[in-house]
Image: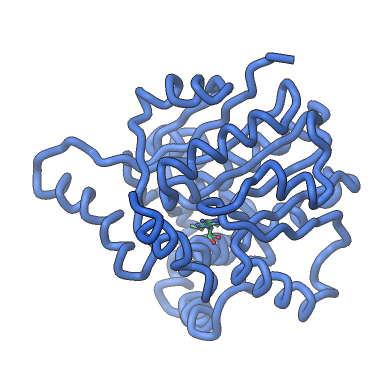
Length: 302
Ligand SMILES: C[S@@+](CC[C@H](N)C(=O)[O-])C[C@H]1O[C@@H](n2cnc3c(N)ncnc32)[C@H](O)[C@@H]1O
């Protein structure tokens, strides 16, 4: 790719916050409308980050006849986004119990784990890394609703993975190199170029200590030749129309090899149907097996 093409491509989200970040936040806000015991994840802050139009849609849904009927019937229906979030929550919780000293949310968007896990974090820093536009917009929302959020040790870090070095940027933000760390990269690598994906993994591997874990998801093109398969292949392409093209994918069978070349081995990989079995058995779930989520541990090279 030429320099001109790559810089044009890299800056598509510099001017405005990501729409896909808001879409997944909406999915978490919808999940919060369910009765407490039926939520796959519980994000009480998600709704605060929604645009006025999305908040109106959420209010309409929560007050609608369909919404009320579904809740009265105790429907635990959900989608892939809360399921993948829950998977990463569980790995985060395990990592904190196992002594992770810091957390890094790569492409943090409106992820509220710094607040939802404030108690378990007990002062351990959470580095929220993202493009400037969304990072600043999120900070403004938190400042506006300061009293709604618990105290936490969140460090805001602005970066463009396509053009800036993660290792240096994190160090400048106060990250402790070599410490056991939990990284999330949720809903992000599929929007990056292969060069940025590899550079990010290499930086994570170089900067983190033995036993560090990275949890992320991936999207790949299914080889089902039927019209349904074609529809599923079109879905990621459709995101190009909102300026967030899906540009990177790896089949789950090849993921361990790919991650292995960057110093990680997979400890848990789950495709969406298995996610449903794990977190919402028997529920009505809208998922697509071209999506999967994994947690990988840094190989012990120290
Ligand atoms: C689908 S959102 C996911 C947000 C969050 N991880 C979550 O799951 O709620 C994708 C995120 O990746 C970020 N992102 C995309 N391209 C990026 C880049 N080149 N550098 C840094 N962040 C990027 C977007 O700003 C956005 O916040």
